[in-house]
Image (cartoon, rainbow, N blue to C red):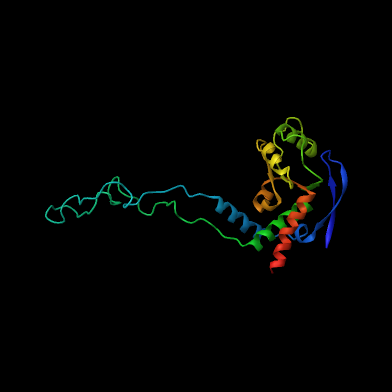
Length: 222
């Protein structure tokens, strides 16, 4: 089964229709699943930099500070004990701790379909025959987005995710790299976090086929 949407050109005029697979664009909203996947993505992007040295990592302390008996003082084996100034830290943060949260492919694809379906119902997705510009220049991409989004002249942020397929996708990515709140992704890299992080999503019609292919592969594997 499928549903039809209009296809626009870079002048924001309708040039045809496109059938969308309901398995991707007509799924119910699943907030719990989407939350799980977003938390997983954010956790997997983290790098635990914080690290406190333990007593075995702090330099010095190889010699026993004084003999075990006969001094009247408390017994100590190293000046790098956590009890000493300049000693190791007890239970401090470690850089080798695991913060990764695993989510299987089936859940990731289901969450992405849920987000795309909701954005389509909210009219936050538009489909285009192509998003290619004449020259891969930031100015040309910005002028195109101003026209497509009807942005006022003083507006400096587009808040849009572009999903582009084909040979021009790399040039479009480089041209849009300096634009704030604008990102270009190939269909295979489209994910839940980025889909939610932008108000609008512009998808080329060729990219729809590649997105749908990700779900067909999942069904073939079952």
